[in-house]
Amino acid sequence: MNDELTAVEDVLKRVDDNSNDYSKIIDLIVNLKGRLIFTGVGKSGHIGEKLAATFASTGTPSFFVHATESMHGDLGMITKDDLVIDISNSGETKESLAPIVPIHRIGAKIVALTGNRHSTLAKKSDYLFEVHVDGEADKFNLAPTKSSTAVLVAGDSLAITVSELKGFSERDFGMFHPGGALGKRLLDEGAMEGEGQ
Image 1 (cartoon, rainbow, N blue to C red):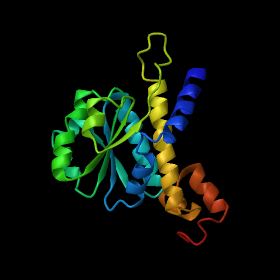
Image 2: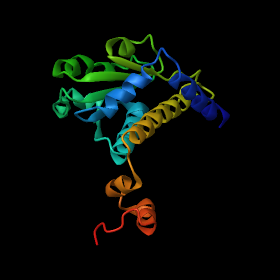
Image 3: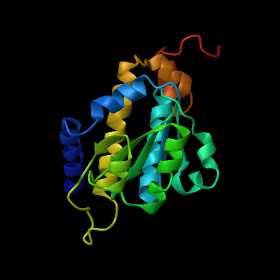
Image 4: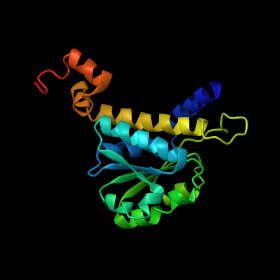
């Protein structure tokens, strides 16, 4: 548990690190004409799916493209107006590196969300958000734990900052999330007054 908390603290330091492109990435997303697309494989892919869902529900059209599937036709989902966030802790995962050249051919920009600023992914991407952690939480230092937590927190920080800058409201949230306990709460509080009635 303490290791995971350390990962969160590390991300907070990285946000204020001038060697990261955090502010530029925020501006890019706020002013994006296209969609925000996440890609990755393995645990990084799972985190990418979650982050795409978070951005979509907070006012930024977003979806996930599996890095492997992108090379088998799914690159067609990407346009020149989109921004792609490529997630890989090592920055050397071959499946995450493969789409870089084709995505650039399409004309879209790429953000490397990685734990290694010296990696191939970082060097070949247009922007960098490094979220380095010192090892994983398991005794073998293998299972993506601290690293995946760090990426999740980094992505959430981007999403919340962007939504605030866009003036995203409770009513907006209710439009995208009318179901479940959250949707009911907004209805009960009157944030969605008049909607669907």
